[in-house]
Length: 301
Image (cartoon, rainbow, N blue to C red; front, top):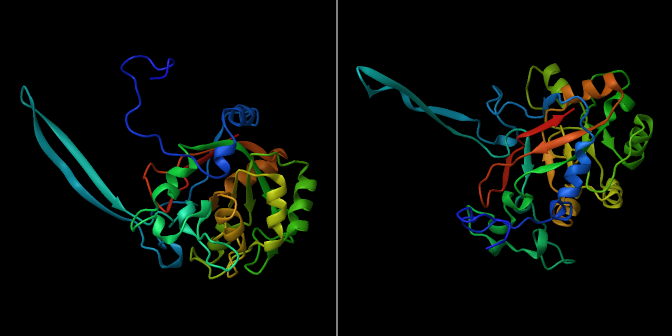
């Protein structure tokens, strides 16, 4: 037992192993990120789980049912308890979400592994990703976030980017330069394409394509040594595309990828104050072996 743990407070069970980029940035990065919080305003970065248009890519929509509805139970002295209890079923990657390392793999002649960390398909029997499930991101990602507002720089006055817009390294670097913000090791980068506004212009429907990052940005993210990469688009990479960033970052370097995040409110605040960094906190669901999780993310301004 650790001398720092009082008697009777020993941990129960094994603590899940943290893997990939989050494992390289510990408490010192969290303390550094706290300096990016100036006002204490909390901004949600999550789309609704029960979107009336369902989830993209054919994923199942959220289903909700009542397990108990206004159930009466004796409470003594002529009183009664009234109890309600509901249940939901939903796709773990059907809204603002994280990809777990077990979500995406690559089979090719240049590598003996398929998934991050040298793992093969026999690493995990369905329905679990085992040690490369969502728990491998750690109990939560708390770090400095930096928003890259591609819409302001390349939207030509429109509130969103068209689906065929390919965001390359030169575009990202130009945005960072114009915004006057730098990306430090261990930061999370959030790329804003205006997807929420694009959907609104389509009556809320999910578009078949989306603006996204191109493969040439991979070397940029590696050089910047980021902890996570996030966007409001359908899948980080330009869609439809070749999933090059999934292959190189999620599978190759263990950089968590966040997709479909609600970044519109955050972008408005950043523009209004000409400030592009903030404290990012995201706590994936505590489901060992899950292939993804709702983002459960906030920006603390």
